[in-house]
Length: 322
Image (cartoon, rainbow, N blue to C red; front, side, top):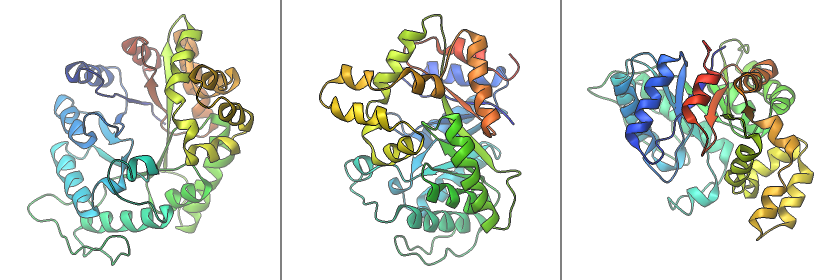
């Protein structure tokens, strides 16, 4: 078991690099970056790798529709070689507004396309001929770069189907908005089914939830910021289905009824939901919140500092050696 963190580049790349170095000093096991409409995630990881020596680096996550499997494998192999084997390649399906609206691609069969994509990437990283695909077809083989047959590949998953797939074909699963009870009752059992299908046990499989966190005396203010940040997620079908299964159907209904009123949409997110999801308060409460994820079955919870709170204080509060 280990604790990681998310470090976005924010407004200042220099500040982000400083925080990544701080995370390494504090004993964090890994640092992940999201793939949003800012600095490009895999390029950012290369920068983070150059600023650190031990810290593992990972995408949390890069959508598979932003690159062909050949380009993804080539980029990942390059970063892995540069970082001396520290890369964890986190892949996700993402959502239609991103895939279609930003990249002009289509999500047709999420689980099937993820299975195909991972199989091609793994073959390329092993130096083998890629298997024939339906969505993607390639004869690409790496040349002049170190192969990476053991590179960990993680999959972002929310639904039971995708969780089982992650257990079957991946080395770990990346989670967002999954409260500890959902990890205990859905994630662990479904991932275990996937591992069993592959003839493997749960040992060695990484379960990585992002944990919104803030070391602060003003819990209410941090929750208010978090509510605003979560508004878009409550509108996305994949998250809505997961939240419904998590027992937060009332929150979803109130959110729907508040459409067009941002303040009311934020109020739809109950204190019960936020307390279950986030680790907010004095340092001891932050550590207790992270511990709750570990007790639910997470292997490597990752602290994700809440905007407009003290980033460094949160990293220090949740540090493995705190």
